[in-house]
Length: 289
Image 1 (cartoon, rainbow, N blue to C red):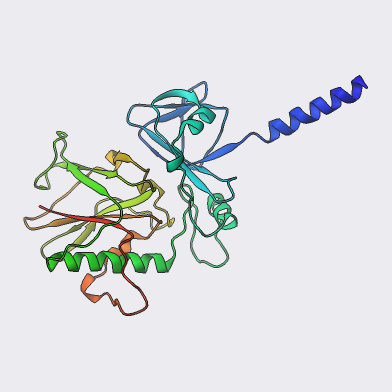
Image 2 (image 1 turned 180 degrees about the vertical axis):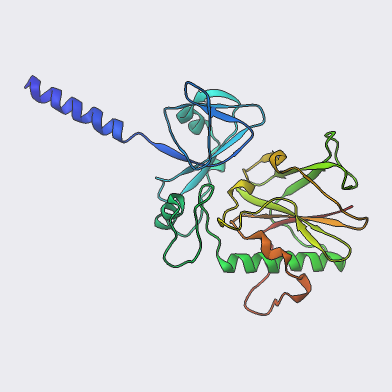
């Protein structure tokens, strides 16, 4: 009898040990370390929920819950050292939004870095990603429509509240952009959703430049994801910017991952009548310099 109880106890312990939950690192801002040796956390690695994690001042860790049937991202912003499970339990439930609507099986494929059979894209990247052509076309149509309407003096509704600042090397907010300084972009997401953001510089001659890098080779923009009710300094992507007088910066926030490079297309040539309906399901603002 005692022998049977011992066996059952060992089996139970084995099941509990094997069932320890892990989370995939979706993206990181600032400095995040974990473990006894305070090793630096890397994108796409898995962290056990019993691991101790240290989020340093200004840092943020976004996890992907791969086991969740619906899929979710979890933003951890509590500064200091704490067990991962505790940090997750303290996270705001409003920040645990569904990741995408295209299914757990596809998500698992993307996280593993394999290419789905119905696409020709390499998905090996930060956290995995998927961008549908329809999403890209709707983004282009929406942004083009917003830009054209603003130039005509119309006020267009913006669904997602965002604010944007660009700072010089001295930390002050820039009111003009010269090519002799290094600028850092800051975006604040005032909504309860995870938003993917970028800033498009439009020069008076029509030239365009995306101010935050896009990962075209890996089809991923996890590094451009801003958590709900959060402000992100994209200091790792600071760059020298040259913008002549009369330039404008258009800041775009999308609730789904998209290929921002589609915005290099000429807005005046967008065919709004070709089955693509412009929507206000983006956050979009324009600032003049």
